[in-house]
Length: 72
Image 1: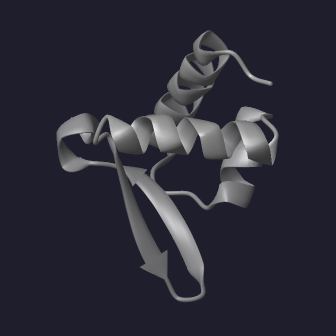
Image 2: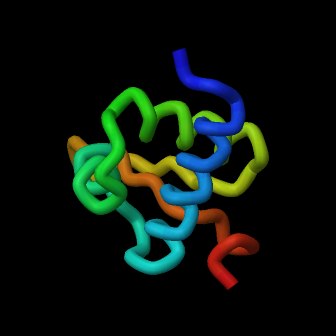
């Protein structure tokens, strides 16, 4: 089981990756952060709760990006 601190640290990794690279799929985030799918999903949930992430359908894929206020 992941600790709250670990989930928060993973959220920071995902946030920094999205800020640097722009919108990504979960598979992209796994590769670029070197986190497991479970960890990426937890991080996405954390960021979503804080209204820091936008979730968009791109064809058959779901892409995650920072909200406009987080992208500045």
